Image (cartoon, rainbow, N blue to C red):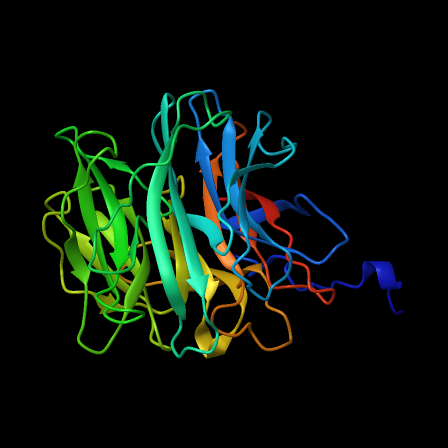
Length: 366
């Protein structure tokens, strides 16, 4: 006998869809900060304080077509993401798309750093990132994200584009310094490189980058880092133009790295998360076959091999956005008080041209 329609299993665009034996399971999935008017919420970043307060930043635009007019917003949660404060504007510049270029970086509860970014897009230009303007700075909160200090001077780590990109930044080293993943370019949308830099004053100043991945004809970006159980650091980075992501390792606290090698997935907006068992979860915008969803893979051998375990946000059936338009992705995670993983991400636009952030609670089954 056929089941009534309400019992038929369907996974909608933007919803999670994991394989049955995945090491994580979905406890809940819901939209955040919903509105009926066309808009795009994207590029979220999450930080957790010692009180378990969650601080989030994300960008708002009046549609998925970028018009150099987006605004950065911030919100907070005191109850593991069950409720959030009304989003407040934190950064806007007329004529610019404002989004984090590094996200939230917690050095301490009294020093929560935010990588402020603003970019100008010109969709008539070629390339994956058709930008004509870019600017990186920081601001700092000393009260858990309730208020923010003045904007720093421009930070230029590379000749052109510079970004403190690493969803898990910063990483405290044994000598007291912090290591941060960074990406940048040598020209306009050319010479993309991924590396790390170091700070001994909690983000007041930064060292010159140590390059992890660069190539004369390949571009690298969107890198995240995780510390392995044996003390090494592992980095996974995006590769532009349809190439699989790459992994590299450091056994000397980031001073040198192994030659990057390809992995089994095509990911952008990389986020690495260690599970209780030590297995490594990698969430990313899945770019295999030009798809537009948020996928995830897991490794149980410190990144030597990866198994794809499904979607944190299923892709839409339509074509992905053009270069320069708002895209899905930007997953970030935190371990909640209840032991679950809180995950924020941006799915593809729905049929009404709306992108609402999704909040997932994931069960660590390891």
